[in-house]
Length: 308
Image (cartoon, rainbow, N blue to C red; front, side, top):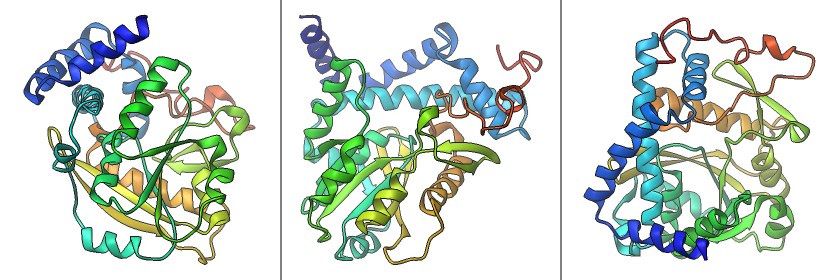
């Protein structure tokens, strides 16, 4: 019963016009930043770790902008419940469509890899721009069944198929590698400690990463395309596609995921506020290194005014 009420409440909000959504977002971002202080310490710790050369005032400014963008992204995601396909297509633009079309014409399937940057959920609208392509989104099941079902419903409205990441190798191996399938993969999540197999340098820090992109691309002979999404204005996004792996290349172990993180770091450095800073991305340190000496664990606390 409560799930139904929650669903219809969210759907009701999604029917509101965009001007109302962004007015609501302005209020929500202020509440998250200054009243609830949602993961504020984590946000500032992460910014301090990645941009130690910047001043506390600069990092606080980026944090405030992050909360505004984060609120926009969450409320824009709700719009996916009711946004028409035609309106959705108008809000996502590829900067290099001809080049992207050439990539899609390789005759091989593709992994579209990206981070939690700008509005990653709206990258699902790519299916509307390239309807001939079968599009599959790999996902980790959310523990809250209501939230999980809502997320799947919103994505599938636009023709996206959902596949749990843990079943990806077997599920994708059954598909014909004929260039007609795109697989969407958000690749900047932090693996659980028992699942860590590779560390990469990310903002100069040894960072544990999921290796799924590399493993799937090599095993299935899929192209890997990095999607560099940018917030052009509120509710409008541009994307630049860049191929970062072609099957047959000689690559070192996990080199494909390393290439992704190089691209992601460059993207974040250009406009830091649009990345998801609220996750504890550096909560683990490499084996053999004391937790207290890991950069995030060694960050100064409340000595520069950033906690305010």
